[in-house]
Length: 399
Ligand SMILES: [Fe+2]
Image (cartoon, rainbow, N blue to C red):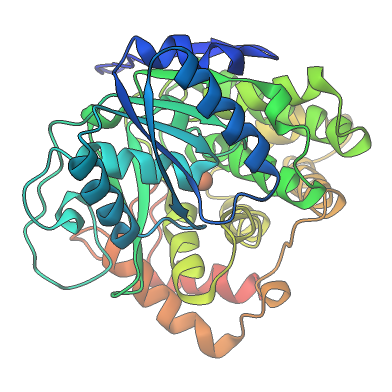
């Protein structure tokens, strides 16, 4: 074992229909809420109306801020901060997917922050040289997630983009933990198949990244990670078969939350594929889930013999490979092949070519990753260590 400190103060209220508690719970946190959601509400419009009604019935005044788009922009958050200040809001309620929850976090912190909001971002792809100062105070935040993927509802991270700089990175600060998150799987039954699949892949990546890229002396965490991946694989299949399977929707939702609320992460937790994925998103418009699935199988094949025990256990404990009569490498290969076949089955891309990226795009992608996630030693932060050449080899294999 190794030393660590753990802290997670989020009150989770889980269950089908629990969104009906939105007003009561919001009233525990404030009197006037900035209600945050998407620019295009689409099927969420009805839910937003219901939440507004519930808040009103509980005596919580509502100011609407429906402005976020996929990959929430710090510029949009600044508009939300200005509105929250002007209206005297003392609470943020974010209803939507990761983009909305992360945007809500940026507003919650931004409302208490002096100076350029981009300075709240902890690590950068840009060379602006601006002073980085993570926020230390925020308005209370309640989230009501409608997409089981990012886990933002129970963590202290907000991924935000800077449109002017074309960059995407994150705010990491204790003050942006939500105070309350209402996890109602009923709200996810209208998600289309592709979005459901991308969400499942994202949740898997949050534990798989740690499993294959971080410490090996974490037996409880590793078992937890394996369980999260298995549970997601089993339940996304059920959901794609029957989108109204509320039991399976609930299992996906809670697993996505638990994959990235810290329980799988004590100690070092490198997420190099996410760092490269953020470059794919900010520069090539690849959606978040796909930005991970196009790398995962190729990353695993490249590293399989540099970390054979991990990949062999993954094959047998997660992908159900029968090891009888097979060499270790055969077992490992079968595990990775099965995993890629699973990704293909749920309809997400598994190569860079499928998302329109060609060989000439690879060097700028690598350069972007180097800026944000390579250490002073010139190598990518992960275990096993990856040099620039290693990463380029993975990118080429992923074409
Ligand atoms: Fe993610």
